[in-house]
Amino acid sequence: MARRKLIAGNWKMNGRRADGIALARDVAQRAALLGKSGPEILVCPPATLIAPVGEALKGASVALGGQDCHAETSGAHTGDIAAAMLADLGCTYVIVGHSERRTDHGETSAVVRAKAEAALAAGLSAIVCIGETLAERDGGRTLAVIKDQLAGSVPAGATAANTVIAYEPVWAIGTGRTATAAQVAEVHALIRRELAGRVRDADGVRILYGGSVKAANAAELLGVADVDGALVGGASLKGDEFMAIAAAGTAS
Image: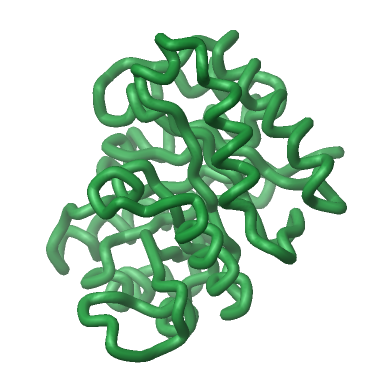
């Protein structure tokens, strides 16, 4: 099944208003040059920048997303954001279960699944992140960890239209280390097989790779079987670098 690639930029906790607007406009201009035949482009700014970035992207072929959401629709959850609030600002995607959330905030796969289900209920597409630590890989547990996280994190009601899986080996995030093409192929093939038993249109679900993705290695990574795009961290903060990755997705 043909799957349109998705190049998603996770800006993490970076940028102020002027920075976010300038970067959004730069990405929008560069995205226009790729045309409709290119990959889908998504930016996920920090919560403080969602509204101004959304304004800057009006009319552009760039989607807007959040970096996290709460599992509840409203209530006494100081500092949290409901999925419906993101949708109200024009978001169409939200990242859930990023390793930095799992590590820094102790999020379990059950929590991630609840957040993903909240996202789907609000009309958002959930980008569900999974990935192993260096200790788990060195211990030969990568595939077991991925299977366990996938089983626990994929939301009920997941379809190719509303759910994306992002494989991000924790040891490759922000470290400059990147999984080899063979390592990526092995894990993505496993994810595809596992999805077949959980999602009715599993062949259409996009699986992204993330972990020190940059322009220099994008073509190789995006050319791997079952790699349907990239979840980009640091490189998404530079419009030229981010869109060079997107261009590699067009060619692959």
